[in-house]
Image 1 (cartoon, rainbow, N blue to C red):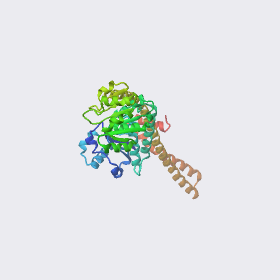
Image 2 (cartoon, rainbow, N blue to C red; image 1 turned 180 degrees about the vertical axis):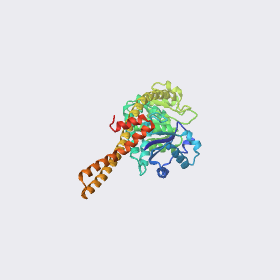
Image 3 (cartoon, one colour; image 1 turned 45 degrees about the vertical axis):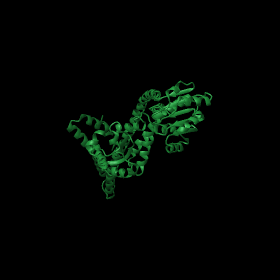
Image 4 (cartoon, rainbow, N blue to C red; image 1 turned 90 degrees about the horizontal axis):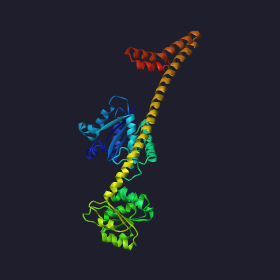
Length: 418
């Protein structure tokens, strides 16, 4: 039995190729049925995300098992094998186990340490488990990867620092305000960055959020998702005094929030401080706002400095994480070798016991027919001895004929001769 990982990801192929190799949820069962119908495949899990498609498999031991699997993958997606092969990677046993642990831990992600991948790996395993996984070693490998990912998160700081603009903006807010549960946040825009920021803020128990967007319907949908109030851009001037934090990211060619607007808001707030985070390019907030007392303005460049610092921290944590993965991979492979040895021991013992039972039955039959007991016992001992030493004797002779001293030494050791 061989554990194998075959895949393509953001490091090896552009999105134009990756999207042609994906498995959609509605076709996954059919794909798994087809994959497990391949003669060598004993079990399989398919992981398919926007950044990677990977097959994790338990296959019968043979030379170059990936060749047949590459052909299956290309045939299934109707792709030219010559165009795809150079973008694929295949890993066996120790390397396949280590790779899965690194993927689940966020060490192989586009954004180092991102947490979403673990949920995607768990879902892939659950989806493939509906009558498809088919190999206990493969199941054990995935369960082990989940515990390793949890250990990496617990014992390192790989996920502690913000490495996205939206997350960095929220981290900045948490550094300035002791508790986000009591503040009011005004989000200007409703695109992907503001959407991510809104979700981060909700996770940190922000109770009051206001979303202002040019397209009211889009703003209304996001507001409904995160439990916020929705307003139009013209309403910002009137509502700005209520906002302790303003995060803005629109595609407006001109600033939406000017110095005069913020001055009026500060006056109405009796100079209670405001944090303004401008993620937009071109800028949504006039730079002169940063000169006002009690108005703390941060732009994209400021957030990038935070992100770069935090990425360096994640890189340091990744070194610790790699050590954990190496240790856990070694432990899993030791378990796998012990399991394989146990199977061999069971087979060897079963064969010996079958020989014993067969020859004992023949000896008992001879005794019941009146044969001399001493003769029967001597014949039983002779035949049983010959039956048990036949295979080891042939192996010793073959090793000697081949001049294979290493194999000869191993055989002698296993037979208790050295």
